[in-house]
Image 1 (cartoon, helix red, strand yellow):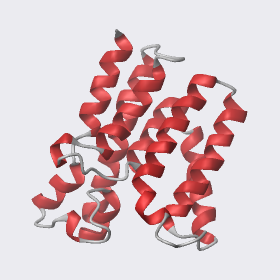
Image 2: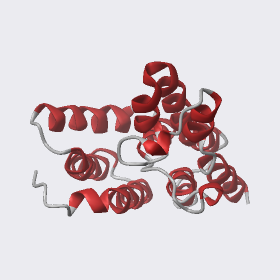
Image 3: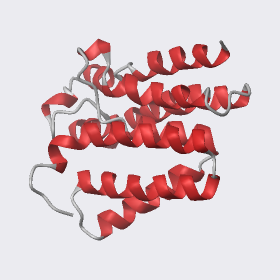
Image 4: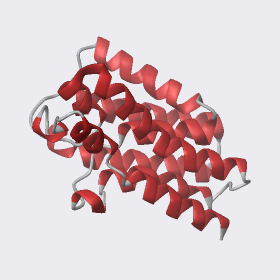
Length: 187
């Protein structure tokens, strides 16, 4: 029952479109720039760091808070799996935005900061940096970096529920990157 409460909290926090709301406060529509995604990257594009940093922080926290609280409360193993998936799922398919949410990257980083005390976000972020340095297109950076991080989680933690949770959030990231992955740009 405790895990279910954190699943609901995670989804409810995840579905809050902070980037869109912050953009409206400063008179910007974050969905009118870049790829039209209602997330932190387009908030940055629309309003620079003044808009992008708070949007990034809030999107990160919507994943970190419910998962970190669940771990702190003792939720572990298989019950933790839906808790980790709920915030990025809520962000990616927000009912508030008619199920047209963001790509859930910041929320996913937050989830894994809460679940692994920053270990997985550091690895994933490092892989993303390597991909960017290699000039790999963004969607492929996410796809390849996520695959590397999934292998890391499976080998380093040796925890089937945690690896399953990461695999599910990774699949969600791939779904949200799908249009760009298959647009013809190769890694």
